Length: 197
Length: 197
DNA sequence: CCTACCGATCGGTAGG
DNA sequence: CCTACCGATCGGTAGG
Picture 1 (cartoon, rainbow over the protein chains, first blue to last red):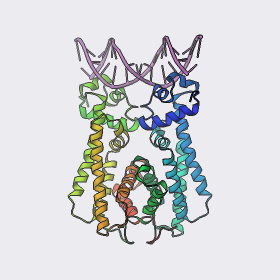
Picture 2 (spheres, rainbow over the protein chains, first blue to last red):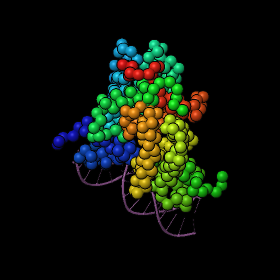
Picture 3 (cartoon, each protein chain N blue to C red):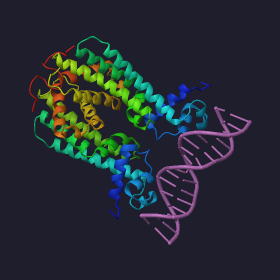
């Protein structure tokens, strides 16, 4: 690779922002990763902030695409929730560095980009709520469910997976999605009713 | 507050490391927060690293104490899991800044302190596995459960709560724990069996 | 506890 | 794309 492009610089940013954090990564670090001097990066990018904007935006667009896909599905809520779970995991695991940067460094975005990214993710979360709500109405899920709370819990569970999931341990991402959906749908209990306490 | 102590400096570190990250916080930032010049902090602390060590360690000790308490419990697995859920949430919400710093900045600890903290948290996670395992054996939980996976999922769910939980919205931390336990135990489904798909 | 200061490093620019 | 450099800021020290 002789001639470098903006894409190479963004790729380095994904890697190092994920590992060292935005404030823990210098332009000289990024230069070393991509095989250039730090100052030469400014031929490809206007500022360090711009790199964070790029990485976060590509993650946000992935989530947005998944949201659009699920909104267009005409299927019972359990299927749509299952698709959200699997799709979310695919985004997270397909590019773990992108996901880590999105989840951990979004707060360091400059405005108005930070606000835009938060808005996109809010709309995404809204789809989770819609699916849960529709499932409750049709008695596919517990009708007494606190939909907003449950959406937060499901997303918390999904967003934590990148911290420990390792494909080398033999669990495919599809099987992980199945396991997670199963836990969310049926819980830990052997048999139904009560709370086990 | 005229005379400042190391405790005041550590308190400032909890606050600012949580909000801005370790690398995004300067000693002069910390000085401003505590009402001193940045250079004066070195009368109370040996280095910036030391502050991160202190904040992470107090969080790790809280988790260790909860682990010890649950290990000493002679109760069925569901009760012990419920105690883990509630205790974990109490630690997270009691001092949200401490928890945020623990979860997000632990990777920036110097060695050997980083390794120590990771080991403590591994032992803590081991207690989750023991409780789940014992519950599976006694048929209090699904016997086909992947215990190691389930422990990771439960902890992911818990560790995400500090990102969105707000006590002002009327949900007490105890009620939140009940809701989370209920979701983990029974899932989203209305009635048992199958996967809803 | 502050002032004054150290060498190192930061994000970024100029000029070729 | 590099060398050379800018002013600002970094973690930390000396001396009072």
